[in-house]
Image (cartoon, rainbow, N blue to C red; front, side):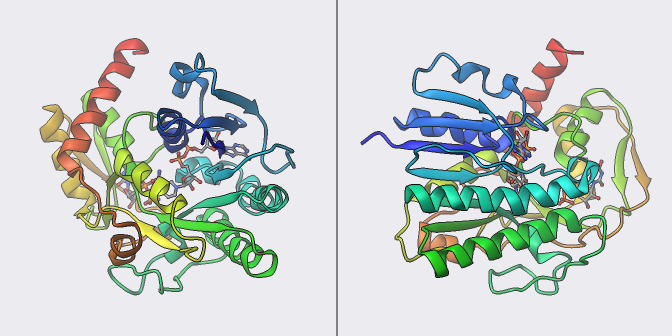
Length: 315
Ligand code: NAD
Ligand code: UDP
């Protein structure tokens, strides 16, 4: 049966891929977005589909709809965007979650929260397992995002315990791919844009900090599988690619794949920048029968192609 599915943040990077996939699977999709970091360009190819609807709305305000499932992705995700208006970021995670959980409760919809590896902060356990409680500075520059997402997880689990709302929590590790915002300051988009323009590649710190990069298609598969899990399984579950790379290795790989003449330069490390990040995905393997299939090199090639085309259209 055709389901009616709400995707908040549906005009963003991940949201637009999710809307596309859900439509392809024969669902009725409502994309809700305030266009803070998302854009109509990301979903323009879906607009003529009669089963696709778009609502310009801010999730910090209530919304009344009838839906079967909700994917709650609305929230700026890159450090420069979420720090631009820190209070608004907290409101989006906290008030937005309350509004979306209220909607789920009223409609009896299953609701999935796009949480983040940032709930682990600068992790004390490596790789990170879901049982880690996290090591987060509550008053640092990243706190508006990290603590907002932590509070959202707490809201989700309490709506489940107290009101029996069907919830799913996924903790997403760094994900990349086509439709990332070219100026969002995230490492993959920054390095590719710099390399394609033969500009200096800006490494913050000495480049020894690590991240694990998941290609968007793998992530979307996992989110959809998570939504389909048994009612009793709420998560949180880590979703990410365990392949761990230093930021210097990433810069070198992007220079190699683009054939760029860019030079690497070193700049100060931002405050509270986590030193290591790698998901333990045992739980997603067990509960979702999921693991990523796309290597960093394959994913980077697809992403580089996207940014090349973007530069050709808007140089
Ligand atoms: P994105 O910035 O491209 O997408 C976020 C979308 O939410 C944008 O379209 C934006 O306009 C919209 N939005 C922001 N505030 C809103 C509000 N108050 N009301 C309505 N819409 C609002 O980022 P993304 O990478 O696609 O991330 C999507 C979700 O996944 C976020 O919740 C993010 O925290 C989470 N996540 C992403 C990553 C990643 O690596 N991409 C990692 C961890 C978690
Ligand atoms: N980073 C970097 N140069 C850049 C952008 C980011 O060295 O131009 C580093 C950043 O300091 C961090 C890592 O790359 O250590 C990942 O940064 P991103 O903002 O993509 O994600 P997050 O820190 O949230 O994982």
